[in-house]
Image (cartoon, rainbow, N blue to C red):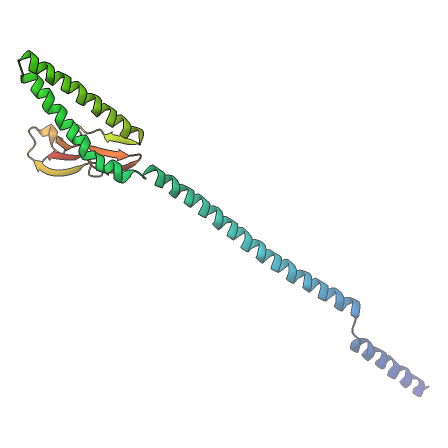
Amino acid sequence: MAKKDQNEETINKDINTEEQNTPVTEENAENQEVSAEEKLSEELGKEKDKFLRLFAEFENYKKRTAKERIELFKTAGQDVVSAMLPVLDDFDRALNEIQKQAKHDNETSKNEVVNELLVGVELINNKFREALKGKGLTEIETSQGDAFDAELHEAITQIPAPSDDLKGRIIDVIEKGYQLGDKIIRYPKVVVGK
């Protein structure tokens, strides 16, 4: 009987070692499928992330270029408009001189010619200003007594203020300032009291 027990033990050992050595195919297949699924889902997640980042980057690019295009259209004529500013200044000077001449002349025939000249120059001046205004040009309102702002005005000189309330304020406007849209293309040149 002892021999029979030994044989059973040997058979049981052989069976256990065979179970351990034989691969379990269903479990192995499931583990391989799970790991393959995990790998695929991980790769899919990475690709989705790349796609979303690329899409967001493209949207930002579209917004940025649209904004740049709008800015370009707003200031496309800046060089031309800037070149016209001295002409506006000349019109102002001409109108002032013609008005002075009209006030000083007493001769009726000469006064009548000066008045007609004044009307003609005023018409041209108004039409020219309206055309530039239609392109987005606006005058920066600056007058005597306004507070001096270094970001808005260009001080060409400082003089002693005639009164204490004019210290740090604009005494005289030498040249008008203009802006095209929201961008200042020429700062008003002013004299400041100190």
